Image (cartoon, rainbow, N blue to C red):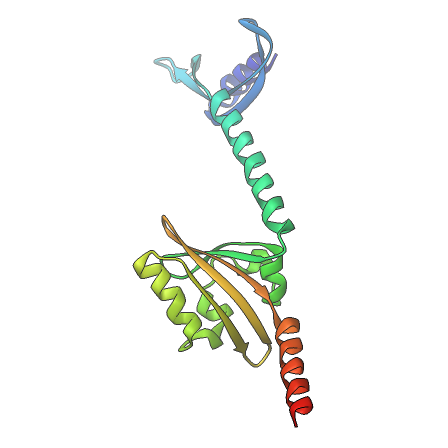
Length: 198
């Protein structure tokens, strides 16, 4: 039924139908859904009228299945990353954010989709010139893991972070958590001990 309607359309309009995706069962494999990418083009006679239709079909079933499996796999990875307690982001060699989880977006006071492809230095400008920047650059350049606690202060954020960074094949992966409450408790303990001493 699909083929007949397409042939009629090509014959009547004299125009090609290109990059047409068709899914369905075939007589060769009943019960199995298959995918095809097809190009339907008119063949003209000497007088210019359409006398036949050329059909080029490429089966894309395997590619479609692979794409669906990849989407499912990416969704699983995204769910795992978003369920983590730690913030997580991936930086490419240019320090652009390529992947970010919801906790990292929350700490950054942004939206995950908006952070992707941004420069890390634009999202976290007060990192410049700090031990945090030095650690990230060392992980990137020397391909060695790094870890530190850093007090980040900017015009919109004031928080302590516990940061771990690991080299990847094309950049670095950064895990971090907000430890401001712990640092505050430690400071209060130090002040309390100082009061007891005095």
